Length: 254
Ligand SMILES: [Mg+2]
Image (cartoon, rainbow, N blue to C red; front, top):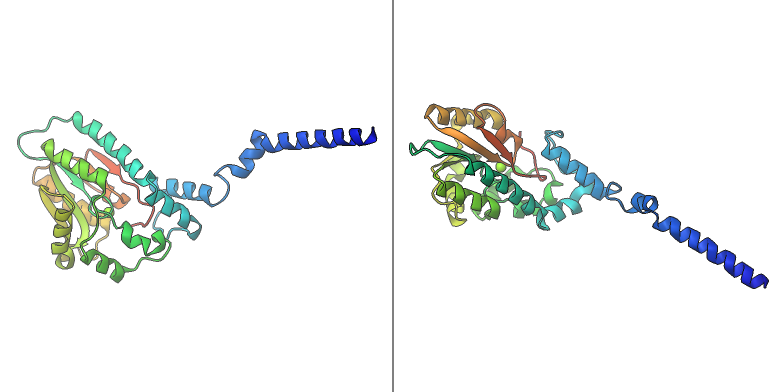
């Protein structure tokens, strides 16, 4: 009899304990992504994309596995597809003029073509930027297209917009290879590729890209949209009627 009572008490204790473990509060506390490095990465990425964290030099090392998952596991591309859907909705409402002056500005690196393979070797931005290493990578001319942006590019041209590519890449050293790389990846039919020349040497990205856009507006172009992976692509003067930020949790360009 005493043994049965003891068994019953043990059973009741186990039931009470398992209920506690399965309770929402208990489960949330130990499994919610807000705890641990996964949660930290979500906060980091949001803050970076919202431009709340600025001038950062490296991705925090506890984000390494998560930034890799984000960039290679499909969510990065899905995020860009949603942005491209928004752009498609926006351009449907624009009456493109026949004067050939309705323009879009697209950045090149990590907007049209991807440097993800390079950054994979730099622990997805957890290692410091290596200028000569990046130039050596760019000189290979093997940056793949970012598929949703390539589709956007083609759609803009079909709709009659003039697509102008503006990049901080140095024209003298990377001009030819960049043209060939874009061509090989299907970026065909753009109006102009504007690269950094000596006259813009030493200028920050915001000043350089603002100066380029100013010249385009002075030529009569109407900038309907401006797409880039860096806030410095989208800030300054003559930014366009709408700007669209492509995600980039790998590096920051000021
Ligand atoms: Mg870029």
